[in-house]
Image (cartoon, rainbow, N blue to C red; front, side, top):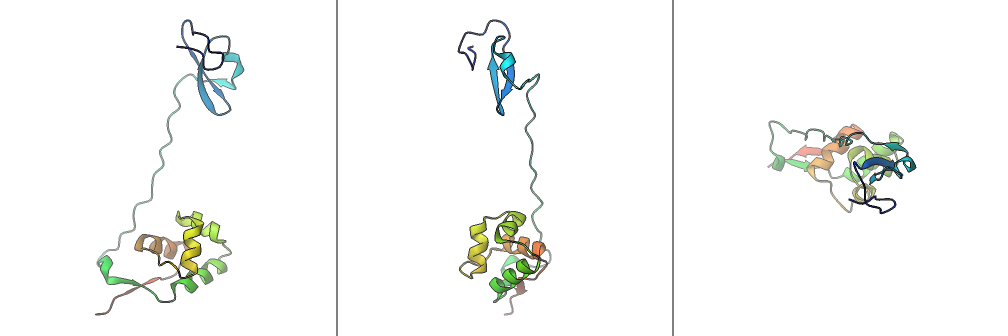
Length: 130
């Protein structure tokens, strides 16, 4: 194995150091060049997703988005003092998606709609009447 800094062959045990946020395996001579020596592998952070919204007692095909969804979302967002970027981050969508929804060029799917309902405390869906 060779040192990831100087390229020399590592004699003995390699040292793991952090340099500018990257972990490198280096020789004894280069070990002092890093910010700190890593004794064990850093544990990967596990991001958990929130549980999906359950719509109990009704089927998804029984829901319909309200006709004025674009205006309702825009007014609610503005009343909460949020920018489109802020709202997008809050609901886990891209800002471009929020722009399209607010302009009426795109209808939100059920999941995105439910996230918007929770974030803005509004109702976007109605029951389909046959």
